[in-house]
Length: 249
Image (tube, rainbow, N blue to C red):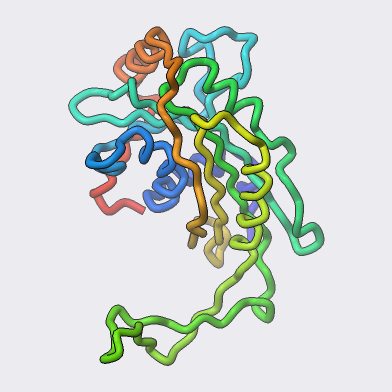
């Protein structure tokens, strides 16, 4: 099963932004902060770019991080750069031999750097992509029907599906590590556990765990916001436009 692509952060992100479901899980903590109730996190399209160099946004070349792993700019008739979300991404790859394997670096300093640079919203996401467990270690989970019985309880079909718990367990462990970083309260975070398809070429399932909503940066930089807007307008090919309601992924 060829899964060498998961060793590359940029390749993981390139696949993630092509799958609506995966991307929505990755960025929800940021969109939820940028569009508080009664607005809706997915009520507008987003422009998404990966690995945006600092200098493209007029930031000091010597600062950290050297690039923005994931830049998300909501858009309607025009880019809403004042609600842009800059996210530091770390990939965690546990194995059966090393189930508690951590990321090579936690990403705290980079996420704080994005906040201090003046992005309107900043965050940190860890993506756990563990090696698959053998079938004999999978859990057997009953399939539920989309209806309730006379007693008001959920009905089940009597069938079962096989569930690999490794991504869920890995994400739970990693969430504790991220929470312990004590990031500034405005910096949001999320940890996502991912199952791969049988051929190892796409994301097939995701855990839905705790996240911390990003809060608007009180030190947002007007110059940076304008630079983000210009990048969207002048270099549209640098972004992938995601329409949440078009059924993609």
